[in-house]
Length: 274
Ligand SMILES: Nc1ncnc2c1ncn2[C@@H]1O[C@H](COP(=O)(O)OP(=O)(O)OP(=O)(O)O)[C@@H](O)[C@H]1O
Ligand SMILES: NC(=O)c1ccc[n+]([C@@H]2O[C@H](COP(=O)(O)O)[C@@H](O)[C@H]2O)c1
Ligand SMILES: [Zn+2]
View (tube, rainbow, N blue to C red):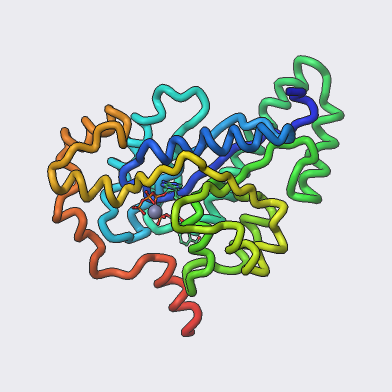
């Protein structure tokens, strides 16, 4: 592949990861293969961003455990990483804000790399031109792209009333881009067709068809753990051991947040009624 004519991509996946499963890790591999197969992209990094406790999803255990399990499962990957910024925020953070945060970090890292280039190779003028252009257009012509990576259920959740702000969907899909992995029971292409906002941005949505369908879900994993059944080979071994050592996922933990409303639903229903 000719590195000079491809766009560098960083993939960001936001979710509960309660706990992280092998399928979450597979998503990154599937997305990278798909994007690089187009010949247009070079995927340089994957970021797993577990949601903070303020999301208030039923059965969501503490972020410190979810972050540690994600860290353990990515230890032997040379490109997938875990970021704790979102997970450690006291309140739930909208996904559009998380995307913005990581894009700003990415540009800052690129800039400091370029500054090293500048010192070494006297490319100051090119760097300055790029950044002038960036500040006027928000994206750099030859800069990296950040794309949100999710399963088709998350894409379809865009249609759930009071869950997502339309402007956030527009920003994520229109400005950054989305990679969506098919999941059984969902039809992302039909969903895109039916949604005006997604149809408008369809060129920024990469649907990855997973032919080796894999029904692993964290819900089923938690259920098996509650019942004392084996979850080996569904999760990385280190994660299986971690759940055992810390006694995670019990009938009690599944009742966490059972009586509270999911943070985005609370936030946007309030906004619509005021
Ligand atoms: N088997 C799968 N196929 C495709 N995408 C998946 C799969 N499992 C998880 N994902 C995606 O991974 C991201 C994180 O998902 P999440 O943490 O909710 O996992 P989950 O298995 O769906 O958990 P839960 O059952 O608790 O909802 C989401 O974008 C979700 O769509
Ligand atoms: N309006 C929003 O920004 C919005 C709404 C619902 C879920 N989400 C995010 O999507 C992800 C969904 O995770 P789950 O599939 O585990 O519920 C989480 O990271 C959550 O923060 C974002
Ligand atoms: Zn889910």
